[in-house]
Image (cartoon, rainbow, N blue to C red; front, top):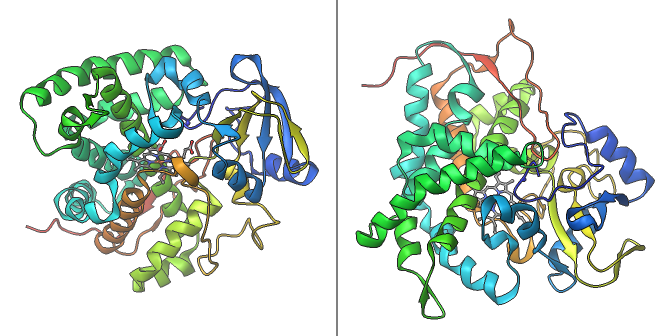
Length: 398
Ligand code: HEM
């Protein structure tokens, strides 16, 4: 998030750039490991541009550490599993991993995910027009993660605002810190309540969990929640917008997918490759090493450019083309190795169920010809600010 919680602030990176793909392409071709200005703590920083190099850094937890996240995000988000290494990371990750296993998610599909998207569509289906970002994507994943975590779903507007402020830390650190404090003040009474009266939500799992025979402190629990709420909301709402833009700007593929929903997983995986919502993951070197022949000193900050790796011409044919018939498998857009995204099964489920219900309930869905075409934009996080559409109005089922 640097903009993203997944990445650390570095001088010389233009986080305000809206269309970085051409720059990333030129840099990939010039040199796959690009020296930057200085990163956190005044240390040298490098951008890693290519798929195979990004993958090998993510898989090497001995030479590369996640502690960079504590420096960049610690002041804003407190203690995070994202910033832990080794056994400490494993112990804490195991506590929440259970809740996000693929097999644990079936329950949320019918209890939370489908009802959330259906309720949002009820509001627009009779109108025949909508902005899918304003009316659907900014509200849907945040409601789902709020429900799973166990905070009141009706407060989703606040979570969305906090998530955006926290993930915008590189652009406005003061605002991110204020949002994080407000979020903690809001969450703490809920944590205390669950200590008294546990229910079946994730906060209750955390207050009753133990590491080495000791309960988690309030600060550690807030660390989980401060990461899960933005990670669950910001990333997936943007990914859903990108999938919708891809479909709506490729009407031939849209027609195939409307007729055959088994194509939705290919739409989702190919869109993550073509336009991932999280374009940077960061690490720091903990030994002198090299990447693609470039010497990297101990302590260096590494920006692993997963958004660039998805367009790496040495890994994908015609990488700028969105093509659901390619096999975009084995990609890095949920990370890989020990810190691989805990929410990836949830994200895929939300995207598949959400897109499926949108296509069912908004027939003849197409871009609104009277509005500008949607544009995917952003540097560390990418998504369209709006998606104006029209469709055949439908009554809300009784
Ligand atoms: C399309 C949506 C998503 C994308 C693209 C995405 C991307 C990522 C990436 C790249 C990482 C690795 C970070 C690293 O190695 O430093 C990660 C980690 C993580 N993600 Fe996601 N994510 C998404 C959805 C979610 C959701 C829905 C959740 C909610 C539970 C979530 C929770 C997490 C957590 C907790 C971690 C840290 C795991 C660890 O440190 O062990 N993510 N995500």
